[in-house]
Figure 1 (cartoon, helix red, strand yellow):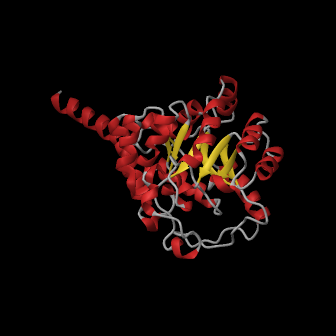
Figure 2: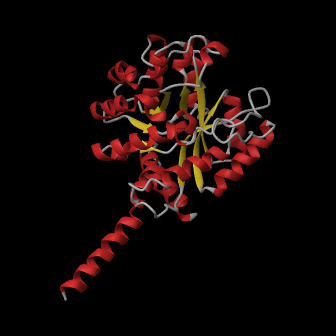
Figure 3: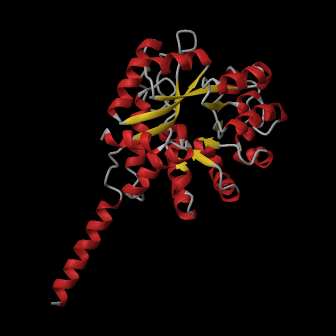
Length: 316
């Protein structure tokens, strides 16, 4: 009888261990970090950092392949970082309800005036301020230049997505001489968070190799959410291992309910699939935790209404 009991216990134990992280989440997904282009801003075709596969040859083909990839991966909503309000509107008109209209934001000195910025928000033309590329312009996201814009975003409840971590190797010499690695430290958001405590902030790339500091920031500021961004598909930069360590740390510290999925596919639609699969294969996550990352946390952060959530989940 004892042997039978031990055998049954061992079977159940091994089954639970083997199935703990092997089950794939099969519901809707929200991608909090996508990019859109037109013929003037598209920078493909170019080989992917890790796979070497070239991106589509034109902006039109990129768009078609991206939509097909989103459909194949059950991505029901995506934050679309665009270089202009007009570009976001094009995608929104063509694919209504599929994207949040985001605006790529760089040095405020060269951006929309505060008045025009607020008017676009009031008209619904800007639903997310992001990706905010302060680091590429030699600025901290807490720089005074941004303060008037953060004040407006806070007043209107518009989320702000901040780039953190590193950038492509050698980019300082090629195209962005003001870029500095130290400006990718997520702790640089602290003054911003203190000045604008009700601002809906999410940190892109989870701080990259600064991820221990990202966890520190999440501990001190419970309003801060994170998306994993490029970490899910650029293996040659050790980013995928960094992402795994960050998510493990967030789970251990109890912050997994503020971690969101984002692919940062740039010009490679396939990167969306690769990033999703990478999370699906994390054997330390339960299927319920994968659901948090892929959908629930973003739905809560974006304050999606129950009708929208029900509609998303009814698709699968």
